[in-house]
Structures are given as C-alpha cells and as structure tokens.
Image (cartoon, rainbow, N blue to C red):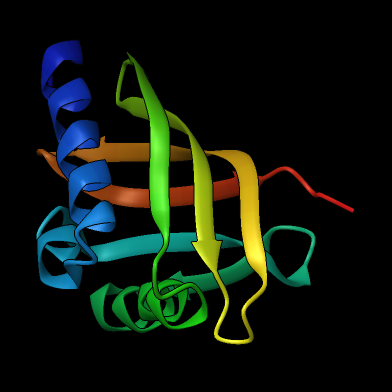
Amino acid sequence: MTRADILERLDVLVQAFNAHDLDAVMACFSEDCELRMPRGPHPSGTPAHGRADVRRLLATRFEGLPDVHYGNAAHFADGDTGISKWTLTGTTPAGEKIEVNGCDFYTFRDGLVVAKDSYWKIVG
C-alpha cells in the first residue's frame, strides 16, 4: 500500500467507527487480524485474534459507549503502519461522560488491517 492508500483507509475506518457500522469496520480487517484494546487484564490491554473475536471485542466499544465518537482525527502513515490520533467522546449506559485523547496503531497487509493496537490517556 502507498502512504496515500493507508491515509485513505484510516479515514474510512474513523468514518465507519463514527457511524457505528461494525460491518464497514470489519470490511477493513483481514481474516487473521489481531486487536489489542486499551483496557484489560494485561499491560497490553485485552487481545483478540481472528475476525470473529475482533468483531466481538469491537462490538463492546459500541455497547459500552453507545454514542461513541472519534473527533479531531489526524492520520499518519509510514511503511505498512498507519496511526490515527483522535479525541474519543461518549456516554456510558450509566450516564458517565467520557472524553479522552488516544490513538490507534494499525498494521496493513494487502490493503487490510492485520493489527490494531489502541491507546487512551487515563483521566483521573
């Protein structure tokens, strides 16, 4: 992929996440993809492997923050790596407002995401 291809794919991903369109998000992922969510039982967060597991874990983002939105998105690319930097906002089912800065590190192969690693600032 070219740098321009990766930047375009990152924009598609942010739009799909903001539309809460899990099918469109998953259309960007390879069958053997990996995901590491920012929160979890390990220093690397919560892992998922393969499309079904990644889809299941990504669905929890929309369940935990039904109005989640990734704003102020900026994208960067080098080699097979793309980075999206954003401000996540949303409201939990309990009514708690969330606003954090974060980024996603993506690795691409043949136009598809093979790895996504997410990071959030900790507000407290």
